[in-house]
Image (cartoon, rainbow, N blue to C red; front, top):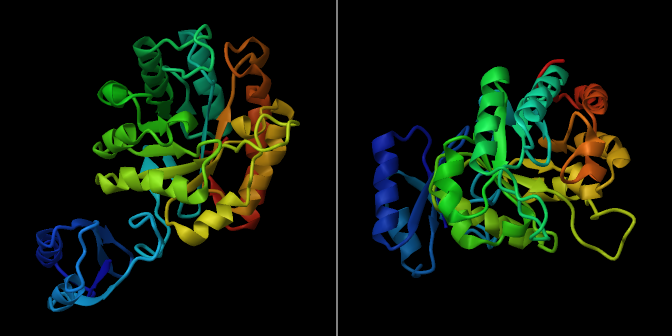
Length: 342
C-alpha cells in the first residue's frame, strides 16, 4: 500500500505514520517527493483492516494499493524520477552520467592514464574491474584488493567517482572502502543475498540486467536493494541473449522508455557489453542518448588491442572523446546535459 500524507507534514508526524505501519507487521519506506511524502507499506501480512487503520490517522490523506509486484521501485510509489548522485557523477534529472574505463584494472599506469583521458573528454565516473567474474576459471580474475587501491589512486588524481563490481556478500565491506558505486554484474542480478548486502549499505548501487531476465525480474532484483533501505539504485541495460549471433548480445533500447513508464529509478545503457563490437559502440551511444537514457557505461582502454579482457568491445580514448562530443549535441536538442566538460 501507499500511504499518502497531507502536504507539509513534519518529520515527527512522518515517523508517527511509519511507526504505525510497522506496528501492523509491515515494512515502512518513507519516500519524500517534490510535492508530497508517502510511506510505502510493504509486506505479506496485510489484512483487510490495515488500510482503514492507516486512513484514520490525521496525517494521512489517502491509502492506495500498489498494483505492481515491485513496490518501492514503482512509479505508483514515487511518480517523479529519482536522481542518484555521487561526487560529480549524476544519473537522472536531465543529467546523463558517463562512466568509462577498462574492463579490468591491469596496472597502475593503465588505470591512471585511462582516468586522466576519460576525465579530459568529459566522463564523471571511472569503471574498472578489480574482482572479475569470468566464464573460464583460467581467465584473468582481476587484481582484487590491489586493483581497488589503484582505482582509489586514480580517483585521488582525477576526482572521478569509482564504479566497480562486488561479487559476494563477503566482499561488500572491502569493496565499499574504495568504491563510490557498487556494481552488481549481470551474473549476480538474482544473487539475493548479495542484493540484500548492498542494500544494507549507504553506497549507490548500479544493477545490471541479467542476460535472460524479464523486466519484472529486473525490477524485483532492484526491489531487494530498495527493501533494505538503500534508495540509491541505478538500473543498467547491458543486452540480453537472443537467437541473433551477429552481436555478443542484443541491446534493446526500448528498455529505456519502457522502464521510465514503470519505475522512478535512473536507467543506464552499456553498449560495450550490449554489442561486444567496438565499432558499434559509438552508434549505440548516440541512440541511447536519443531514446532518453540517464547514463552510459563504456569500456575504454589506452591500447584496446592489448586489453587483458573484452578487447573486442573496448574503444580507445580518442573514440571516446568523439562519442562524448556527438552525445552532447544530441542531448542538447533534448534539453539534457552530458555531464563533464571536455
